[in-house]
Amino acid sequence: MTKSPSAPKPDANEEPKGDRLQKILAQAGIASRRKAEEIILEGRVQVNGVIVNTLGTRHDALKDHIRVDGKLLHGPEQQRYYMLNKPRGYVTTLEDPEKRPTVMQLMTQKHGPHGDQVRLYPVGRLDYLSEGLILMTNDGNLANALSKAAAGVEKTYLVKISGTPPASGLDQIRRGIMIDRGRLDEVRSGRRDRIITSPAKVELVRGGDNPWYELTLIEGRNRQIRKMFEEIGHHVEKIRRIGYGALRLDVPPGEYRELTLGEVMALDRAAKGKKVVPKKKTPEFAQLKSPAKKKFTKARRQPTGTKSASRPRRPN
Image (cartoon, rainbow, N blue to C red):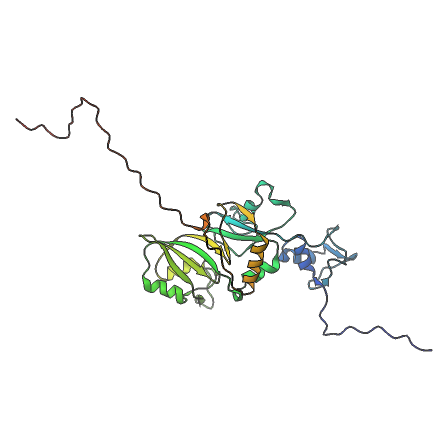
């Protein structure tokens, strides 16, 4: 009796096919990837009728029947990309434990761009007191690629400084300057962890006692701009991000718009380290407003027939 040929054993070195389950849930808009991991560990996910409560398993979102809390997933949601002009006084996070207003509240005003069907996430951060251009998307791959320091994506800011920095201090920033790494209250091994920033572009935009500079960085460390100017003895009063790669801020504060296909392609090129060039014409919201002119008030004329008490009359 001849034995039927047995099925070939899978190669131990063969890469498992499909995507990680937490990535599939995130792409379907269920939750962020970190939150999706918690959902899996809680045993709330079934794949082909079997509960999966371990991380790292791979599946095919198009072939496998994946359910979360009994509800069937319908594949990845459509990818969306937005430019938001974050006003001062908002935090760049999904939820804030201090109950401060968040950028998500700006995106969901007027029922949001797509109702409640699409979960959007900010790319990078602007601190509470900073304002300007924030990218919002549900494309996790592009967001991660843009956020990696190795990509070197240029981010451009208008920065107002208290006092006039010396030329030597600005040259330090242009070459790279030593600042504290991480948050200001972090101390490691009994001393602060210090790091040298990458070279930056600095150009004077408006002079005066409190000048404005245009600053271009290829990294985005915690409170980096404020730390850089503090190192040369000057406090930063205002920060507005006006550029990200080839994008330039062109929406009013608190408003947003969807990016064009060409703009998304330009972001993808920037994330891959390829050169991108912004439009030559700078939009209104990426410019400094002209300083308000002081109103000239004319001296009031005295009514006819009244005597002036300012000077005594000369004797004849």
